[in-house]
Length: 510
Image (tube, rainbow, N blue to C red; front, side, top):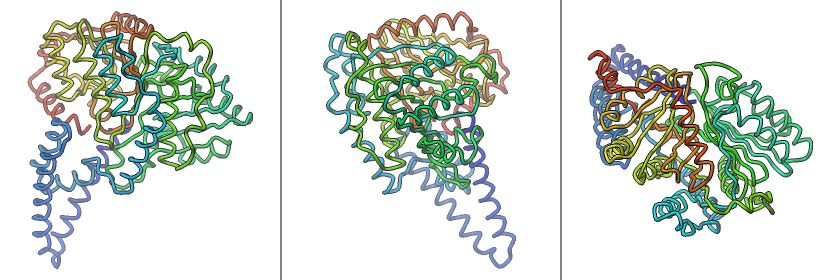
């Protein structure tokens, strides 16, 4: 959950700052080491200068650069050290080899499925988007796949249980958050039953995402039940930039032909069995057919990255559900985004949807902490006469982050974008629907962490009938939401507006 990652990031940053201050004070206070303080001071200044030069020269997002340069210049003694510890996505040679191995595996397993040119009936924009995902995310476009949209986690929950009970060969589960309760316990009961039937059942969960929701030894508990389990990026209470990279994906895959993804985690608030921030509005999508093989490969490459095993072709389904044979008039394209390959797949999918829109763009997001590129694209679309509407939460999960979201309202409203807040509670769905023809449902929030720091996934939709369901759900949700006006944004005090301006600058670090 973004709240947990943000809290840990701020705590680690403050811890690093305190450690550096304590070290400096210790050297200064101890008479016999006082001479070394001068060297320590100038070393830190030189490090900060080097950090700024490195940041200016690298290929990261401009907003991310500014967010780091300002505090480094304001606190040159400590800024360089903090950036060195927490400020990038640098990989060791071993990690680079593992990431390259993941990339090669996905390309090898999915290359023969690529067929972007077959989308020509939907226009050049569709072909170009499909080609981008095939070339840069190794994510083929598929037909012969049934896509079902769920407007609430409450609706997806019983269908997940139904499909899990049908499993014959294997079940793969990968989620950012797993929490013991009605949702997870119901799924776990089915997984245990399937293990007894001899199925291959595997679970991946993110350690920080589930840090406060599962016991420390939970992976061992699952292994004892016969459920193979990996924990992504174990939390170690030391300063490390790797803590920024989390597995934010949500995948539930059955036999390689049935798969779920979307915003929901396996915790009770996502199906409104527990109330934390009012009504929890979330979404999910079910795929049945060819496209689920791509999702299966996503899971297996992550499993291999952590555990190092398996031949992927052994898991390709020999046949598909018979109803999928009639789903040939549209395309679905599951994709994944890695923060460590230098390619912002999630952001690029969103930018392509925005830039190619002719009539309307309807989107929902829990966090509107957008990069300059996305902000400019949304504004330009609205100025060109495209009907751009955004729904965000009204009840926040974290107040400071919500202030950053609201800090982005004014420039968008000035350009003609319509913004609504979901008044019954918290909006957690990450959906786009554009011109009745294109859309995406997945895990990618419109913020820097999802765009640049987390492993994410989604499903791009081209001509799929469920796009109508996504649009209708948006309009129903809009009717329950409060429209935000430009006058309301400008009515806030000067102090609050200044505070929001500062938050907007520092947003990439949150």
